[in-house]
Image 1 (spheres, one colour):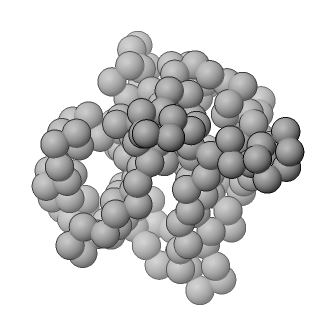
Image 2: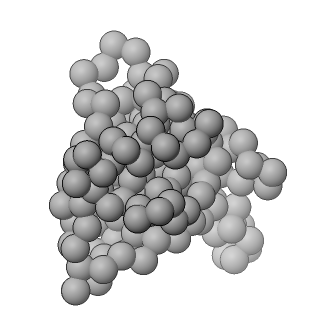
Image 3: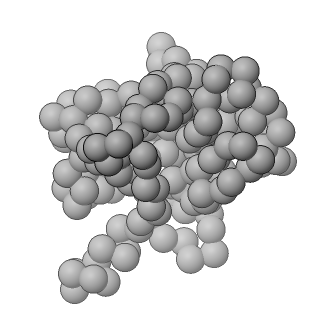
Length: 167
């Protein structure tokens, strides 16, 4: 199974549409600040989607967090702004452990990362609309779940795809 993980699309449906086209996922996780893009995911893909609320998603009734069992793992999806992710992982790690999670997926910082923090994997797909890392590439993440329920997580950029395919 392939899961597409995106965050901080900030209304940029064309970038999200491109990532869906490139990856053809079985599921989609949107980690907040979609600013309405998440409402149209069903038009971009038949893949089931889980979405959480970000700090820029005003007037939405999306949940702040979602906890899912996927394969051998329990994942917490959150935007991250309630946990001060700009300043470290202590608060988000404590929340994840309290919910029985071993993986945390968050957004908010617009910086892609996959980190091992104590007993957790804490990962951010970056932003597919407004990147803040040095390369300024529009990033997202894929998670491959094998038949044994184990994960392989990878970060990608739309620019990487264009370079490989000569677009």
